[in-house]
Length: 281
Image (cartoon, rainbow, N blue to C red; front, side, top):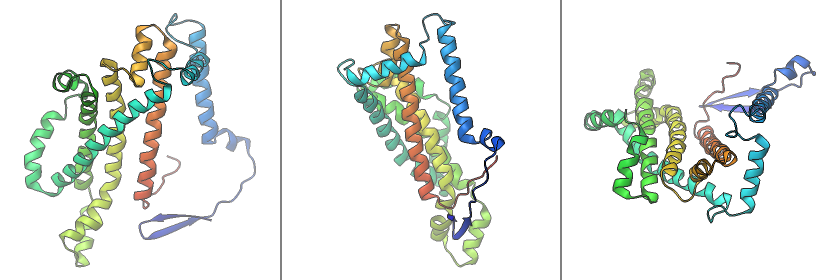
């Protein structure tokens, strides 16, 4: 027996073992995952082997060998794990700083019309501006050190966090507030028991988008000027015409982004246990 808690309601589902079926096996999502990855790697290997892009595309096994080699030797004075941690550290610092400012500000904008009137015009002015446009001004303000890289990440992650927190509150069903009022609740109860919990899914969606933007921004920052990090590996591979290093850096960034996204998903499941999993869509 397994139980899924939804608000104050518990739904129990009984799983029964079904007889083996070839159709069920072929349509199993994990089998399809394996098929998808296998086809992708096969196509990649074929294109590289036939040199469709000349020598600018390495084969999957060559990229794997390059990554293994980087774990055993120092590259630009740092092991592979040092480059991974350098990028991860920049992303985490920028992401956390942006989140702890943007989420409360977005909530206040949605709950207070005066805060909204003051902040929203400025937010609408800077919102369409791509984070990459801030690279040059960040270098002028903070130089080529860590501060400029973190600043670019903050700019890139701030907008999705604030926007989703703001819309998460504004899109709460008004009938939920009516229920609190009928039960004798006050404005404080509406905010704590309805507004915040109902806006959590939108906030976490904003965090996922912000995290993706953070990895894009750290790559852009490290490509501009850096002596370590995964973006540095890609740039060095590009400068020395080593496609194995370029593709290896891209794979490392994808894996790190996937891991951090998974952590956000786990936190969302912990803090939003009432959410239902919709199957077969």
